[in-house]
Image (cartoon, rainbow, N blue to C red; front, side):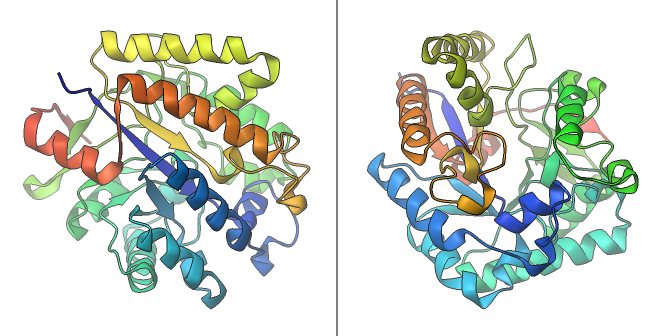
Length: 319
């Protein structure tokens, strides 16, 4: 019997976008670590024979210095997604015209640089809105992957604000980052948004632990591993058991700083979790991937979405 799917994706947040989110000075100069991170992550993935989806920020694709590295991702056979152009976590506040410009500009430059046209989108900071969904559907995107059904969104936001240098006004713009408590009760399994003019759009939520609705993507597992590897594996095993019990095919999320430490990205050594070495992070990643592969077939988002569209009858959710 074939194993259920688990899709792997990485939000390609660059150094400047981390600095921008946290209110650090100098982000406007768009410092980048793609020259370090991309060869590193491609080697790690190749050693595990994994293909994943990279959600790329359009602004990074607009700089010629990054073209070589973004093209390497596509050339290595990985799937490409759209992660917005300006990487603003208040994307949900955009008007329809602003949203169209944001999506179109990112789509066009990412396609030009990588040679692959994105077919899916994830909002920065899990930001989404009905306007976003309508724009994606009108553009013919197959799916959105912006929702994070967790009850701890407000706690994550509180921690984020406490570790940032954001002004009062910037915090106001970001007041819905990581979602509201009520978002924790959104559907965990894939479903279709029922949109205007009979359009529909597949939603593939970032999977949180069924029943408890707490995250188990790699950032959280790394944090727990700092306490105890055995505790981390127990946490992951519970998540796997609950996914299988509820027949939930996970969408598992990665971030660049999950796979590389302050020993290689020295300019971000002060960020949470960057005190963990790159070797340690890769060790944890390999351990987690091998565990997940025992229970699921690990695929990029596009392959998971294609399978869902073919064999699943999904719920329609009105916006």
